[in-house]
Image 1 (cartoon, helix red, strand yellow):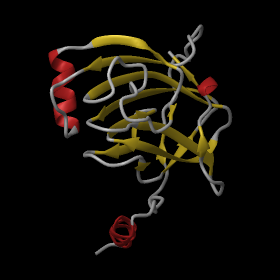
Image 2 (cartoon, one colour; image 1 turned 90 degrees about the vertical axis):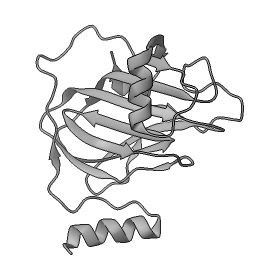
Image 3 (tube, helix red, strand yellow; image 1 turned 180 degrees about the vertical axis):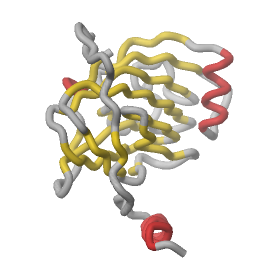
Image 4 (spheres, one colour; image 1 turned 90 degrees about the horizontal axis):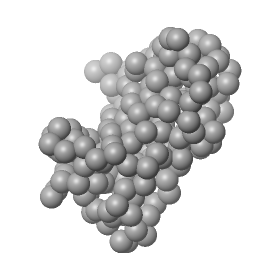
Length: 190
């Protein structure tokens, strides 16, 4: 068993978040850099009769995609029972296809993670930076180290779903050696 496999398995068994021991993932900035972006992120919704996996979420979006009001960013705290999730019309069985850009103000090595309830597949700058395929309470994904080669906008694409009860979706990032913090809404554009 490799050290990386052991560390990830140990972190999973302990329920903790473990930063990757591999080299940072190199993010690719948007080229050309976008101008005139609107605040927030674009989102399309699907409302399946049930959803328990990312595969089912993709299928629901292939069946019917409904444009929703833009997300203000990725800081959506745990909802109350019956409260609509994100900017959707429903509180349960919601799939969201989220796209836009995230801005990093300085180059360097960053740690990124997400809190999600339920599933998430998030790609920033061409790299998978957050994934959970299943159902859970509002909990962290594995933290990922990324290399941001230059300040600017990076493409963001995320598939997210919520099945029942409450929901959350947060993105956190921080420079290497510092604790990740919530990404402010101003860091997102579409």
